[in-house]
Image (cartoon, rainbow, N blue to C red; front, side, top):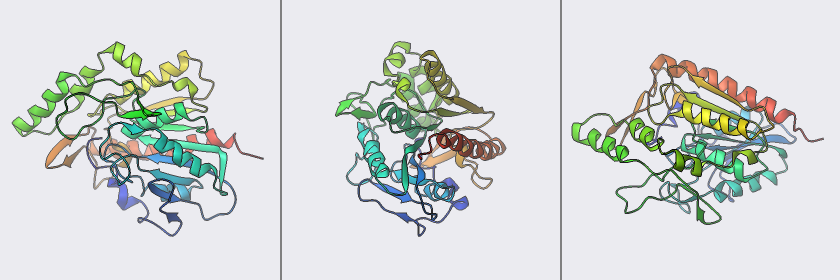
Length: 318
């Protein structure tokens, strides 16, 4: 999540910018369309805290499967916030509007897929925009977290805004700073999990920061990693499902936790198992083992496409 690792699967994916992909004008990112004629389902793709157009190499794979796929940058490119702080959810709303008016898109079959902080944003966006009818949230959070600043801050800020107003968020506990300081002082890989775990003990703040997931107009698939060393994605998926069930969400929501897998298992390969990653000269623990991460990724991709097919097929327009 704090490392630029989401593109590690690039060797397995199509080259950047194949012929059926373009750089859209209405939003920052990459848009890839199927080569077959007619109206297609569409999907918004959101990367994590690496920022930029990090899902651009994933979009062609969704296009091959028959989806108009939009990799949407929400910070870290010109014209957008430079850091993951006070990011407008309307960034996703603009991409949704652009997709809905395309002649090759069925506006009744639009999904969203986000990873890590992008999973957090995907759940927030789906709670905000009723035109989203299926959600894949990979190692996400169902509530708002403090922003990821670039250096010391005088006061914490939200990661997100709606209508110009900050979204409620959970602040980092002192343990977060202690974990980061310990990594540098002892020259050890950075372990962010204790800081997130400590922050989640503030149950009042967590409850106040929960997104209104009951507003989501379609099923939610939450994917967790049992050995996630960034944050407790299994617990956060469990919270997502419990919240939806308590509020009688009328869709086929599902959750899957992958044993032994780490935070970025979805993009693990035998050559790049992604148990940890380098960021500015510092190693960051991601979790999992090489074998578990690769196996979980293979299983999860099959689950994702099966879920999308079931969730959106019933909404096919006449």
